[in-house]
Image (tube, rainbow, N blue to C red; front, side):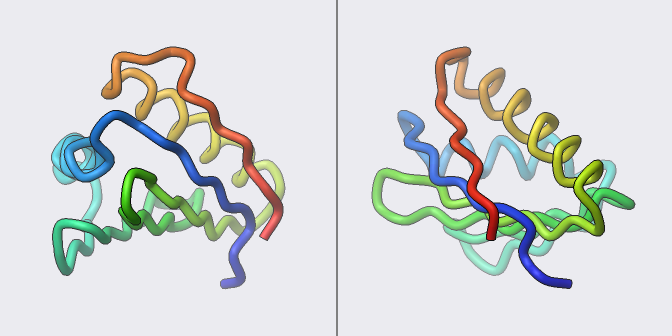
Length: 97
């Protein structure tokens, strides 16, 4: 599956945010997390998402089967990260991949 969209966000602590995200969804999905800076979460029918900590940023790449799934997955990820970061102003400028 080809990447559908990408975004780079700059949270307070990207590694901690990724850990929180993985802990939240580990009961629902089989998460691949080879190290503290990378993870892949399958998100069922919406398609997988890759997360990578790079410096002070969190890079997210979505692999969605169609535009509707891509939009829904973007909304789900953004809302969860804003809640976990406790920052409703966290900016998500999704770009087509």
